[in-house]
Length: 211
Image 1 (cartoon, rainbow, N blue to C red):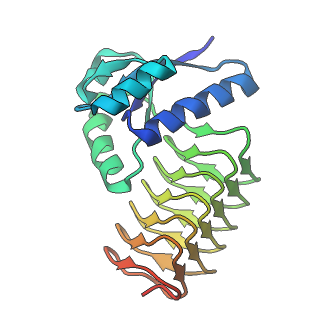
Image 2 (tube, rainbow, N blue to C red):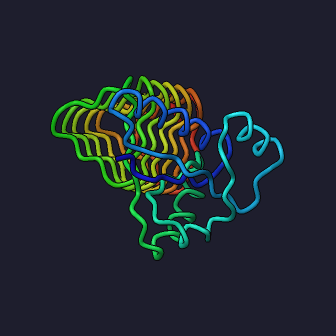
Image 3 (tube, rainbow, N blue to C red):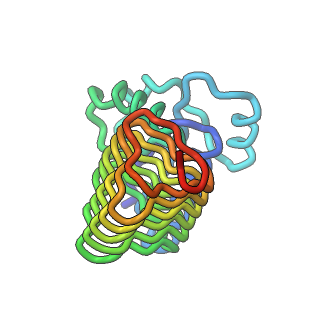
């Protein structure tokens, strides 16, 4: 029997998750039934996009308390995702962990509640992904890496082995974090950057090497 699921956030990232759920269902025998989307102030174009996808906007985020369902936070910005989770955690609804069938997750990895692994992403072995970590399309995470809660790894980014990414860190599209480096809480690595030395919490770095 399919489990009910709501997606929080009806922007592009959330709508991508809707497509992922359809792929998961097709490959595993229909485990999720998407009830719709929660969003405090959905923009008109997003509502139009939901309509074209045959999905419903159910109301503001607080409506989760009225729904007996799993949740997934479909918000790409890791700091906003963390803030939304802080609002929703007291409601006590479980967070779904979603792995696209076209992703690869190797042995002895630990995926916490709310993790989302998009199509083409690769997680090798002995990796720890914290709560509500999102790995976007074709991102890679190497052996023994530790990604704290709410980390966002954007498309085509590469996190090498033994790296540590702090809470709500953001790794931009096509960026790379070299072996053994750390990125602090809330730090941002810009698109295309190459991290060759540790990045302090809250810093924004870009370029090759990242500065």
